[in-house]
Length: 341
Image (cartoon, rainbow, N blue to C red):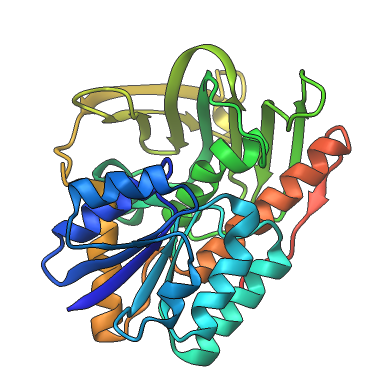
């Protein structure tokens, strides 16, 4: 049985506590939050859980095996490093840190101490994204041409991070999981419409050595909520609409063919192919539950989670590059190829 302490019971903390509490091999031992009123909610719903306004109490508790940090990004490094140095396995909300230097230090500390470090990139544990990964790994798409994402809504404005860290972070982790390739360059444009607040709209383009290009549109200023991804390949294409109640993923047997045959030089060199559409059955398990179970399994069996610290580090590197490009009005920022610690 893995005893877990949760730091932060604001927006995401209640979801973590609920899922950890329902796992067969885990138990929520304690929750820390600075707001006593939030702790009262914990006490009413989970009467057996210890509550405290002092996160250090969780670090000192010898019964706690792992710490989950669900606090603002600017606290992740301090709290995460404290947990690792206390010998606790670590679950960190995304993005894992404000800078790639901080992220790398967390990865190194966890590795040095032989501790599990999982970064909560929940989307890669959804049935939809895992199904897309299966299709791509099986080679059904052929050569991947592009990834195009629209992730927009009205609000919720963040005070401590810009819209890239808040929304595009999901696409960065999905891209890493689906294709296993780190971008070599990033170009981004964005703007802050309200003085004293982070950028609320951005358009990001990622370039890859394989020839694939990815484009991500994120905004807190859209009149409707949209969560759509298009992936184009030489053989097939995928659409993913996260807001669809059913058939979130659709696979189209559509594409183009190109000929360089000198005998056909006077004909159209590009042809079009239209075939069937397939909506595969998806695993309907709650992504956070799947992720939580993997975290516990990795602790019990000394394994590495899919969303480990190295993936988290690669995502932070892209956030840094995209933010730098955005503030340089679209100047291309180059990344090193491996993107890992």
